[in-house]
Length: 316
Image (cartoon, rainbow, N blue to C red):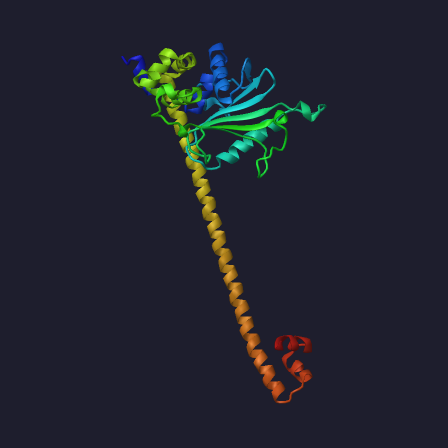
């Protein structure tokens, strides 16, 4: 019979977006409390009350039609947050993807009969385990600014933000006592599958109230049933990435082939133009010879079936 720690070592995985949504988005007080703690830590603002607008979960993912594995969260001040654990392990198109999330969230608001000042603040908060932003900060906030960093709108009126959390930037060897709240939570995300086998996880579970709260939620995804769900979802993502990569490779190959055909066509045009230029040079020399022999331009024109203006152009 496996011990609890062994089960945790096998199963719990908060880097899996399906499990992440379940832990923080299930319709229960424990999940809601964990979600408020997460949002407080990573948005660096007071969070009193939140409602998950898409908390529906089906453990049998095969029965889910086009599942959305992000969490759409509304604050008591009407702020809307799109929260996601991004499982993708490559940088490909991530900035474009996050920008789309923000545009989709902001544009989903019903504005008919209202004025623009009533638009809600919208934030995309996304966690991912790759290095994407060229700086040392694990957490970055992006808003509308110009080339010199000048904000397009006043800070108090800025209603569109992307908040990124690059978990790969965490120094996992940093002493626990030197970690801030964000670093501790990310360390827990990355290593909760190890359970009490990890010394830092053990200390946090025993002494940190927020981590204790997360640990109780993680225990709900630590049985063998969840192990299969997480493994199957991992395979599903890998297959999706493989298909996307295949489509990208096919598109690259198609573009290469089109480029090759275009280059061949251009070469053919160049060859034809070269031949025409050579013929014109031969004709030019012939016209000069005829003129030297006293033949009139009118007679040359008739003999070559070209206008006198065309002949003059050839001689220039």
